[in-house]
Length: 223
Image 1 (cartoon, helix red, strand yellow):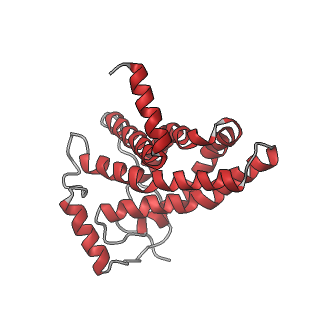
Image 2 (cartoon, one colour):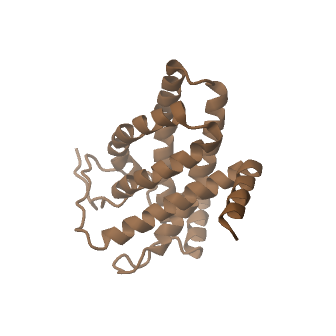
Image 3 (cartoon, one colour):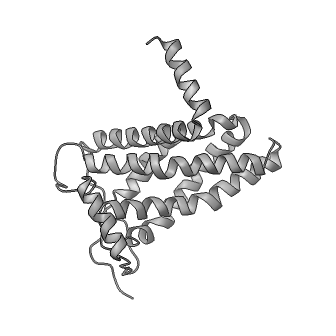
């Protein structure tokens, strides 16, 4: 298939199935970034555990969650050999699922609503979009990332990692996403917002993966 025909097919899917297109694109960038991160991490030094200030003991597993985690084990989403020198394929699957089925659709709907509710490119409108995106969408999106990953990893405590890593991850996201999204809302056409964010996420996911892969201490200090 020629490049022109490929572009026409992609453009046709983008116009007729924007939700599907944006979800697949976002998930693909997300998974590719994690693949590259794993490639580089094979030669890097072990990272130190993130500091935990208090013990978290919020085991919220119930019958439904247990069944979901059993399904994750059946789908080979749970890590089995953490010392393997090959790629962590279960983790790549988890990123693909998170990007395609959760983050992608959420971002597609969010930007569609945001562009409808705040139309225009005036500085005041752009700033409203910017702060709404960073302080309304980003916190639950970060929490959903850590919690959904813990669920697919079949962890006994789904909230523990999120509670320990959320603040530092959100602070870092502010430094990265505020300027990125300012350009997004000021210059990028609405139909290309998720694609632009996907490209930006290709860089951001490496930062997010860094926080995700910080070891959580087995025992935290009690106060």
